[in-house]
Length: 329
Length: 271
Ligand SMILES: Cc1cc2nc3c(=O)[nH]c(=O)nc-3n(C[C@H](O)[C@H](O)[C@H](O)COP(=O)(O)OP(=O)(O)OC[C@H]3O[C@@H](n4cnc5c(N)ncnc54)[C@H](O)[C@@H]3O)c2cc1C
Image (cartoon, rainbow over all chains, first blue to last red; front, side):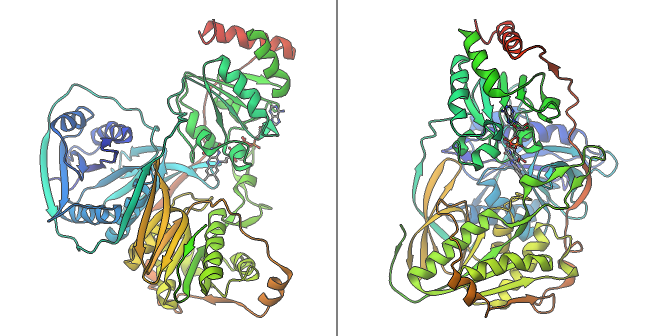
């Protein structure tokens, strides 16, 4: 295992299965690798903790991984993210990857800071864009900043690895064929004293899942009151869809956070997204801009949401939506 | 309701951040720049939850609550608020050396401040700050101090002389986690809102001052603080352009509704 220019993607699992964000990162990672200086080639490596099955290996390969590095703990399992962070640090000290990416899940956001501190390098959270600077070959990490009213491109030119977390759903995943790739296993010695213990663990029934919806009717502060969501619910039902919300509406307690779309909520790409009384702050757009058809209903013709929308209706949603529902019969 | 067992008091440090009220930040439509003037500063809401948790622990178990922030001199405001709610001690880490810090440099300075104060059982952080939303500083401080960190904590279940049992919610799971003292917890927005100050609390807080500390006081190396200590740099800032051209549906409200339903039919969303 050579290359000090390798790009690592951290393999995260949920209830034993590899999370989709891993494949999204590999797809992006493959593109990034192709953009780098050919004189300093580096491979795309999937880094995993638990046993990677042959089938998983081929799957990781199909999304672009050239190698699977499986790291473990000498004489035992890594029980917590703190121990996994230590293992990752050991592996990074041995192989010196140029870039280390992980999903911006609760897990990724717990492991990655611990690794960054230990390696004394930079870490950019919640990126919405990644690219390679054609001149310097440095990783360009773009994320919303300053209250999300602008985007900032951040780089970590002087330290390695360059580390970033990326929200699930931001990058598209694309597989090509199926082929097994080189697998390597390494074990490291870490202190045996567990830092903390998980006593009990329950997987929550996530009855409501907005990310898979084909149609989303979303509401914001423009609803002016929580009952507005009943109106949106009616329209959503007629369209066979579900209700989404801006953080503005969630923060006011009008609807549960499970419905929130945007940078700190869910990233969605439905066939139809109807934004009602949502101004269109970048953090909101970050979560829905890749929907196939976006329609915005807003009183204010200047609202930024119209820049992201394909169709716009300027007007009071309380006048427009009941008429739409009526017309739908 | 947390179950707390007998024993000696718990000394808690709450790290807090002053943030601009991001809901009120606006963009200058002509110049495309941020209008930060007149945007009020507030205590990061997740830090408020952490403070409430700390005050609750002291009520039930005894001990002390210390609040710490790094920021401009004005950030003393949020510490004064914490004192009026009953915090025992407040420290503001401030100075030129700390300006322009990214999360690594911030975590270094905070961890130095924590070490120089010394002797805490628990460090509480908000899970993230609403201006940066990185969620990195809590875990990074724990990493620097070499103590356990439990992220995304929703509640404290039990405190024993040697450690604490907390509940955390993460990625669709709920976990009960036991960790020893000292540990660092990052706290999500709790259901219980931060208490309001009482007249008595405000009056008694007048006798306690916000202490300030600089580079030397916390024994920090200047090379590892502020911009100098930050491996990341902002390369450019730009306004998101969505480039698309919107088709406005025209006419009366009635006509707009009719046109919209036609569209839905054309695209196959309704029959
Ligand atoms: C770090 C960070 C992360 C964030 N993450 C997210 C996120 O994940 N998701 C998110 O959504 N936001 C997020 N935000 C908040 C975001 O910046 C905005 O504040 C928020 O999206 C605004 O919500 P809104 O559009 O509902 O409210 P507003 O901005 O107040 O907009 C309300 C809109 O309703 C319109 N309106 C009013 N009355 C009517 C009516 N009767 N009929 C029709 N239109 C009407 C108004 O013209 C206005 O455009 C984040 C912010 C920060 C700082």
